[in-house]
Amino acid sequence: MDAIENLKELFRKLPGIGPKQAERFVYFILHSSPDFKNSLVKAITELESRTYKCENCNRFFIKQNSNENTLCKICSDQSRDKNKLIIVEKETDIDKIEASGASYNGLYLISYGTVSPLQDSKKHALFIDRIKDKIKKQGAKELILAFSTTFEGEYSANYIKDSLKEDLDFADLKISILGRGLSSGAEIEYADPETIRYALKNRFDI
Ligand SMILES: [Zn+2]
Image 1 (spheres, rainbow, N blue to C red):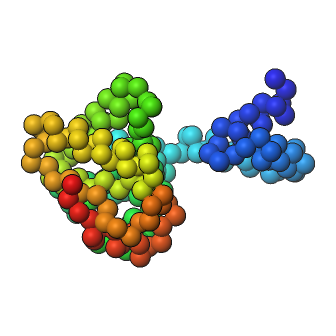
Image 2 (image 1 turned 120 degrees about the vertical axis):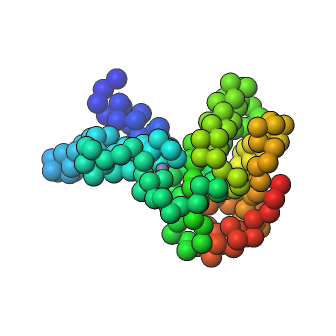
């Protein structure tokens, strides 16, 4: 594969990027200055070398120095309420909830996506095991499922709820989902702050 095709294929792996867009990116870069190309390469390299994945919530954060601990700012904040745990699909959902001004003071876990009925049982087991581990490790008393109101989001929330309800280890766990306000098909990423505050405040037990 030549250099142009290679980069095109890499861009096609990005979410929401089709072949035409991937081609446009490649030709834009091809015509850009050597400085721009070098900055792009440097930025991607630094993303790999300067970030760390929080071992508690799976969130990526910028390393300040090599001695820094392995927890992100939220997880290392002792004033956060360990009784509460929100499960979100992706990093940006945490940022949106934190920036919404909602009075949430608990912790988070990024599930890295959702599960769907077509996926095999191994994928489901991995998905739920990570969640169960985290609840136990943190000692959370309330779990808030903040998935998108898409088919996959709702399926995943139900799958988590059903799996936890049938496991005696989690008999005392309170499970809630975000309240109405997030319209059908909505992703937290695109919801406005007021909608997020409302949905979090008006969550209901399931
Ligand atoms: Zn964290």
